[in-house]
Structures are given as structure tokens and as C-alpha cells.
Image (tube, rainbow, N blue to C red; front, side):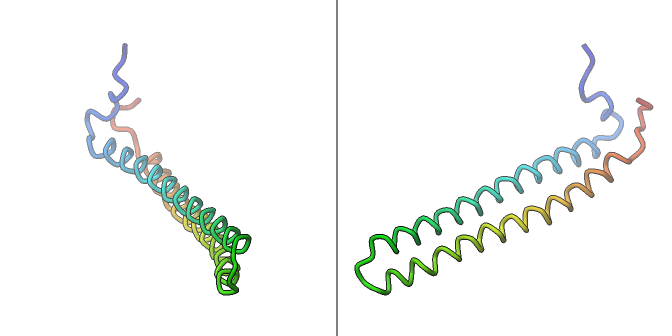
Amino acid sequence: MSDPYERFQNEDLILRDELAVDRTLLANERTLMAYLRSGVALILAGATFIHFSTQPWFGFLGMACIPAGVAVMIFGWSRYRKVRISIDKIRNKLASKPDITGG
């Protein structure tokens, strides 16, 4: 059975860089999920305020929460895409480095 990390034995920094990029990618995805979860919560809170409000200011609060939730979701998606593009550039740079082991 061959060692899966055999190509990194001469150059430890490359393995750490690739693992750091993977961790950053996962953190970016978790952050996107947090933005989407917050946006959905705002939309649901707004719909609840509108539906169950007995005072007019609760209705206005609900009408403000719905577009705020949509805005949070759009902001989270755009931030995710921007960071993902940066991560892909770094990953491509790491993939284009010459392999020292000749494999």
C-alpha cells in the first residue's frame, strides 16, 4: 500500500498550504450557510410579525424584516462567490507548482 502523502515528504509546506486552502473552503461554505440561515430567519420573523400583529408597528417591523432577510441572503451569496474565486485562484497556483518528487 502506497503512502498517500508520499509526494509531500520533501516539501512539508505544500501539504500545509493545501490543507489550509481546504479548511478555508469549508469555512467559507459554513459562513454561507450561516448567512442563508439568518436570512430565512428574518423572512420568517417578518411573515410572523405581519400575520400575528395586532398593532401597526409590528406590521411595519415585519415588512422591514422580509427585505432585510433577502438582502442578507444576497450579501452572503455574493461574499461566498467572491471568496470562492479567491480560493480557486490560490488552489490553481498550488496545483501549478512543479512536483519535486517527479511523480
